[in-house]
Image 1 (cartoon, helix red, strand yellow):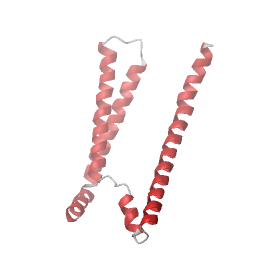
Image 2 (spheres, one colour):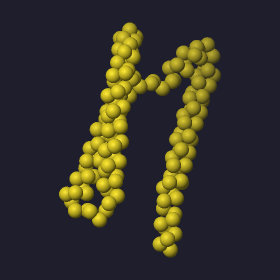
Image 3 (tube, rainbow, N blue to C red):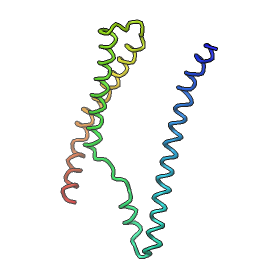
Image 4 (cartoon, helix red, strand yellow):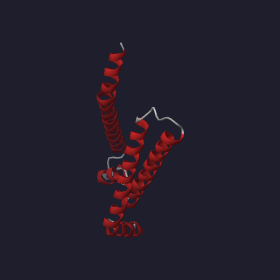
Length: 141
């Protein structure tokens, strides 16, 4: 019986969980699109003279600014690094040496955090001109 659990848990985590997450995200996107279509149809029924292009533009989700995307990477990088350090401290100072996966998780989180931080700093340098142009467009509007 124990061997069955050892077989099914990794399969569930590696196969079923990602498929379920993708299905939920896909269904959510479809429902959002369906709701947007229903709103447009309802508005057109009540007011047929409305400009459809302007309505669709108003209903469109606002995209995040480049600066906001970069700051999100900085935040994720700091969070992952801190979580990785916390796992390392948990491993070394609280005496949980029999749980060796904690050190692996800590190292992986630190690596992911460093990748986010590198992405932030490189992106900030490469996209400086685009961020300035974006700020100028925001001021003009």
